[in-house]
Length: 143
Image (cartoon, rainbow, N blue to C red; front, top):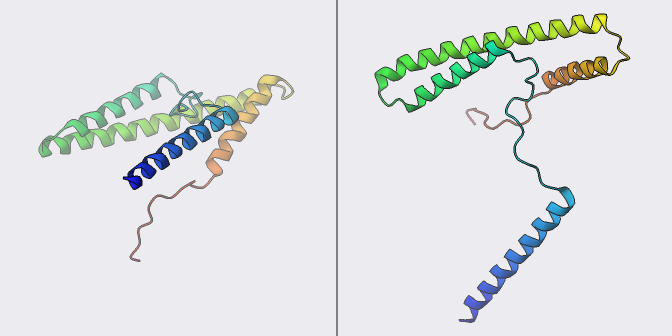
């Protein structure tokens, strides 16, 4: 009987301690309002990219809902095609947007706030592309 009571007391103490630690962390660090957007760099997106991404996501949903193996093969091919088209649209949109930005920077004085903003945007994109993978989840090898 005493071991059950001691276990209840330890559980209650643990809950109180966890609640206090969480409250102190919230007070000290603050609380976020949720996850950031899925797409970190959307400034170069256009209507074509949005349409292609929507098509790709729809094809993927159809593929995941399908249970018939024969239909699944066709849906997988249509998903692959939509995925290729989306990648191509993203690449074209990015290239066009960066080309436009570089041309704009050539004609604009870099002392203006807008010019500085554009330079930081380019630097951030280059830094992002330069980084290695942050975390490797699985490494396949014989050992």
